Image 1 (tube, rainbow, N blue to C red):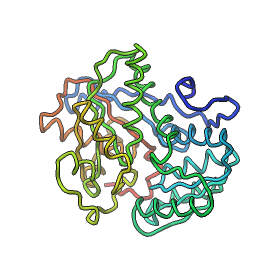
Image 2: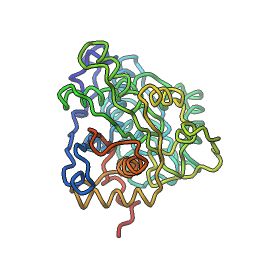
Image 3: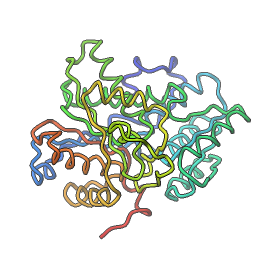
Image 4: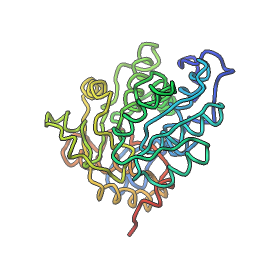
Amino acid sequence: MWRYREMLPVISDHNRITLGEGMTPLLHLGRLGEKFGFSDLWLKDEGQNPTGSFKARGISVAVSRAKELGIVSCVIPTAGNAGGALSAYCAAGGINATVVMPKNAPVTFQKECKFYGADVKLLDGLIDACGLVASKISERTGAFNFATLKEPYRLEGKKTIGYEIAEQMNWQLPDVILFPTGGGTGLIGMWKAFNEMVNLGWIEDRLPKMVVVQSRNCSPLVDCFSHESTNKAGYTGSIANGIVVPSPFGKEMIMRVIRESNGYAISVTDDQIVEGIEEISRTEGLLISPEGAATWMALNDLVSQVAISKHEKILIFNTASGYKYLDSLRSK
């Protein structure tokens, strides 16, 4: 990831905290494509990052910059993967970390944070409740708050996904990108990278349709896209816990990406997600996260709605390793 260091906000290489994140595989899904009639189907496997998710990118940059600014303690609200990443990178950087996580988050996420030495606080409710507690901890102790889009540096790390896609695809972006979206830094970061590359003259001004994928159990972005009133009280947890964000702070930025790219927002059910995990595992030999499986099932729904053609160049995302979810997954 740090091959793009000139585009990142860390000034001195001495402050860089890295565990080898970035340049994750871009995999051609030939068997799955042949089975379902897709002519050019790809998957970006972010589960092969350190700590097993794409969160490593943003956290690596943010913790590096925090070290550069002299920060000695931090706090983060998380559904799981971001907390694990922050705990690991803070351990590597000698920074104290507090992680605020829902009690119903998979035990794997809770354990990894504790192994890295973080102070883990478990709460009833979803990530929005964790966000309120994290803010209070920050105000009381002075710990730097790493909440999504409440600071600028995680987004900068996430944008490296966009640079990698362009480089790995020989500077020809796909027609469509489907991304599992909760807080939105991955989606917003990619779009930022694409526009930076257009301005640099590295790619043509023909950008992909960006598709936001959410869980049917918690779909504020889909509701906003469909001009339906959001019922925050009705949102519940999902097997894809990483995209359960009832009130995304960056909602307007996410909506702007969808509009500017002529994209979509779509949700899928937990039953569909489990079906997607099994289908990709048995067809491609890839055990992907529930969030990743959601993008595959959303793609099929969009094709059935004639919103996407099977002959377009399509990229779906696996944002985390499926192995981290095994204890919470059921199989047939």
